[in-house]
Length: 169
Image (cartoon, rainbow, N blue to C red; front, side):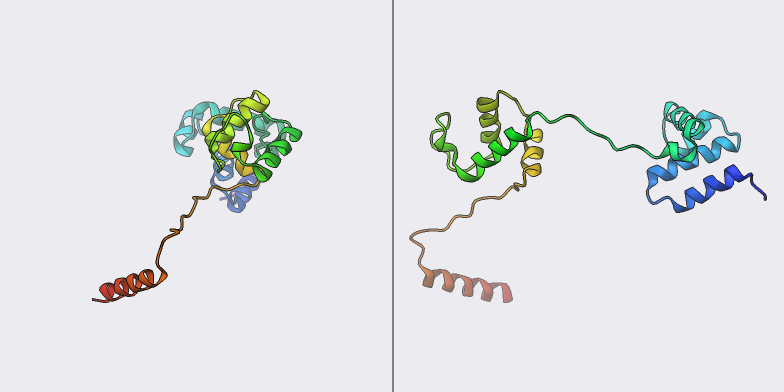
């Protein structure tokens, strides 16, 4: 079956699509060029009719390149670069107890970081927003490990050996 050059170009793009979203966009245009109705295309591709209309309009304006999504800029940051540097410096070089709003906390937690940001910069972060900020600043979540001061190393070794013997049986 001979297809028009336009349909052949879409088919080539569909074959080369590396992710499902781009494949769906090309498939939408393919079905539209074949004369399918918008609602039928939406049902086939499993998107809403408005999305089909948007894809078709993008294709009409810029051809197949119009289907490639632009880079999403996302929401602007709440803290400036200088404020983020100041926060990073506080977390790396100080403990919460160094600030008068925190009395006895010696470990930074997201809850404490949120309170510190609110007190210092008058900016409120959600729990997830503060988690993302910490990740962006290069921090990761770790749990503190505890060691018992009065632990007897000999008793610990005996326990480990006894535990291995129990597991074998």
